[in-house]
Length: 363
Image (cartoon, rainbow, N blue to C red; front, side, top):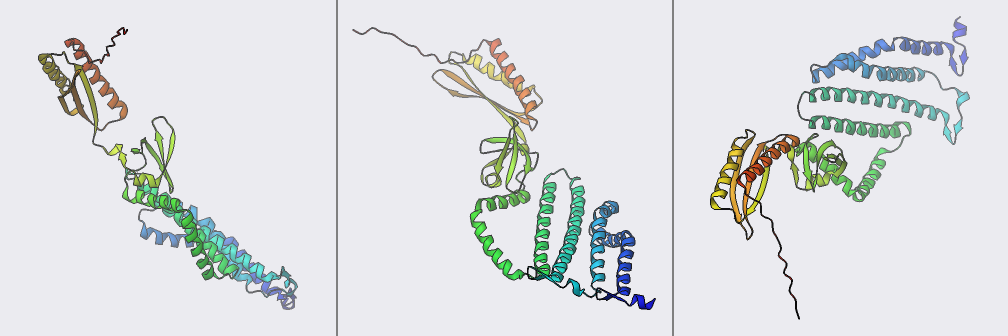
């Protein structure tokens, strides 16, 4: 029996093959147990950082990539105990086949590890989103989505650099130097895009507006539906979708209509210049009485504002608490109709400018 186990096959005793296969089969059978145990230890660390975290979602995200990572790692360590067969000692395009196998193994191991890190980021983002949903502001949710994507990109880039370093023995230092020069050239070529990216950070942290706010910028009025890295999307009253670069949202004068405390209505009435003093004074009092009778009106001002050649100008201004546009229009319409009814009852006419044309005969 010992003679059989000591017999060489592909430059290795059969005993070593059985040991390696036994280790791989053992890990294959108990990989779920080991991965759950390691995930539990990792969850204990996460739970100290963020309290009140549910363990089941964490296991659902981490266990599968952790299983694959452990399986690949143990397989690589076990196979490392075997001597490389001389029959496989050949080259492909001047590259030893042994080096190709090592590079592929390292790539697979790094991909599994990066996948595990990405799942952990997804879990952390899920925890932060749950906490952000407890607050009325939507800015926190936008920040979580932004930084989740940002850190994922960073980890993927680091993973690619590790692959170049350990799988292909590439000098990362020279690569980073070349990338810095290329990045500077790209930065000059994409200056506007970088300005929009910086403006997105300003929007996230300064919070001049959030998702759901009604804003007015550069004669465009709409509701903010999405804040991206380059632009902000607005839904206008015509139900169109307008994309505004973030740089313009920051640099332009922006009116956040949602944050106003009141809605203002202004009405200019040009009464005929033939209106008597008594009727004009009585009209002002009756308009004030109309506004006083509306509980929605918090403040108002009725004033005989100006005298022109053809009219007496009466200015009616009132403020209503911040309500929806539809409610404001309905209240404003009722008040305007009441003012028109008062004009009809008092038989006061609005000024109408007429142009008199005289025809003469010239000889």
